[in-house]
Length: 373
Ligand code: NAD
Ligand code: AHE
Ligand code: ZN
Image 1: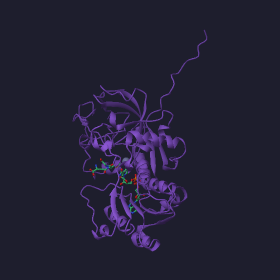
Image 2: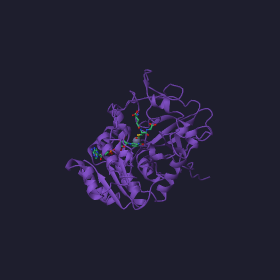
Image 3: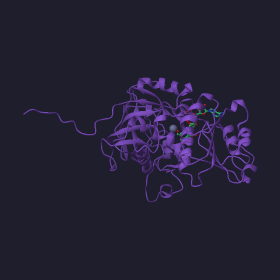
Image 4: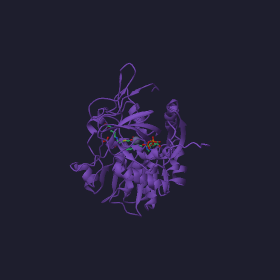
């Protein structure tokens, strides 16, 4: 990983160039950096959990004006009448730019990033916000309340929204239920926080790092913790709840954990949700009997939120104090030169989210000088 000077070309039709104010590090950035992502293409600019300001707009872009405060969204929302995904209430997976996004380029097949010698630098997840400037599709931006704190609400761009949505967007959710979460990072703790808020009465947290347990119980609604290094988590859960857990969540990206989560789900109606991203080549397995006996295996991308319509609402709920985001921010850094410190922090085991401040928020009002005539 290196910090270098990059040329950021102007936005083309349907695109927006933004000035990035803040970017938090998500585990998925590290996963792609490690080479485990089959779609990872290098050299690239990582980063997808950000707040930014619109710097310029390309031809045909009418939804944004220069100065708008926005959150980049790796799951876009084209909102077109003939997009069966945007028109459906069942999904947030708008596929409009997914094919080119997966190839790490813009919809016209080219990149807006290059080195001064002409070397192409690739995009990442349609965002690439570990940068002073980035170019995104206009359908990949959510315009938010200009009064929002950009150094906090950047978290809405991925992990926290994903964890909250896994609970809040589940039509089968019911208060009084039991929940089990593997992986007490920011995503897993957003799941437990939302579960507690929506009335779960037993919330079991599993992590191989026992240092996570105190905070999980104190601040994020977890009622009991277990370290899978100390024994079989499935057996432990079954000793607590005879027929299994109502809702289970993998927030590790490890396929053996995903299997345990499914097999710990309640006989007859338990649901298990895959949230963690598994490395290239990994596959799931279980006995089909687990499904025949009524367990349901599913997954979520970005917690099911429809990005452009739901992200501004999430930001408002944070500003109203209904959704608590502060406790997820364990580390703060300033300037792109500190990106390695940010990565080291997430690896250290005591970091939920580290926020990298990249630029000052511009003043909302024009500055007027006092003049004595
Ligand atoms: P994180 O690294 O902060 O947290 C992961 C946690 O899992 C750590 O606390 C770690 O100690 C724990 N862990 C590791 N092995 C474990 C095991 N065997 N059993 C129990 N716990 C274990 O990561 P994060 O940012 O919270 O992200 C979690 C996962 O969610 C990642 O795989 C990430 O790529 C994925 N993710 C998915 C989405 C989505 O839309 N589906 C969105 C954001 C992140
Ligand atoms: N490139 C990976 C896919 C990774 C993946 O599944 N990403 C999640 C978001 S992780 C955010 O931190 C996701 O939402 N996926 C849906 C999508 O359209 O990418 C691979 O395995 O190819
Ligand atoms: Zn992420």
